[in-house]
Length: 352
Image 1 (cartoon, rainbow, N blue to C red):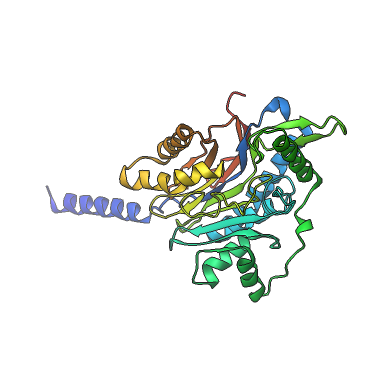
Image 2 (cartoon, rainbow, N blue to C red):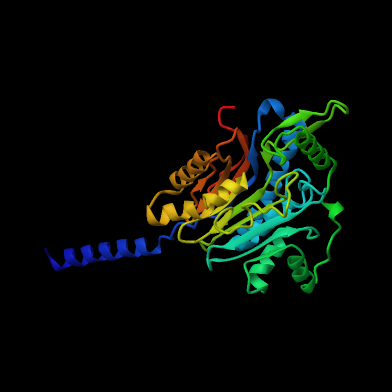
């Protein structure tokens, strides 16, 4: 090979190397997944107008969180924005519109977790906090604790300058009707707490009342542009609950979990079973120790819940932007909005 040919070949190689070096790396995926509860949610039982309301509320929550992410905000901020929108909606069993306990009072639980730092905050049994998810974050960031409950959690909120709201703010006529249904059932020897149902027509008034065959917990998992994950969950618990009962939503590892190494998870369902199965952490553990992909890990864990006799579902998201939304009920209010262009809301079981 002549010197001229060698120089030409060298120039081609160097040019190719420079071209490869200048090729920008593909942008990191980002986005979020949301749920508004799982249960017996059947197309035939849900009036078109009410279905539209649920879809609109879920989309508004997704849009609020996605805007945070698109503007470069953190996964934690996106979760907060999304869950606050759902807590402010009377449609869901969280914040305004929460179910009533046996004393006719709303008791609220919430949790949030940062997958980057593995820090978490939660509150349980509060009665006067307008947006429980906000106080959960303050527990994480402004206290040395993870979980505060009842009057103590509200005392902490007051020390931070929160304005407490009357419990009546959370109460709706629909939830009062559900409590009466549960009390009537209890008086007839049926289960005391409102357990999974759908829409029923009240014989006297002829009004449609969504009963407790749906677990209306709300939750969100998010992935930001930096590759960080976060999860948040908020709920009013079970209709007619007694004795200060607390479900899985504020229990880190049961109803809420996030870890950048694996995934972010928010659960909805019969909390006692989700606590026993340590659902949110179990999904992450399957990914970390068994090297299972997200969808398989989530499906396997929900199958465990079903084997125990529990019902419900989860939303999950990993650092690559993969999502999973398995459930073992006839429906789950759910949706996602991702930088890949995926933007959808679903309510019913596929094929129904």
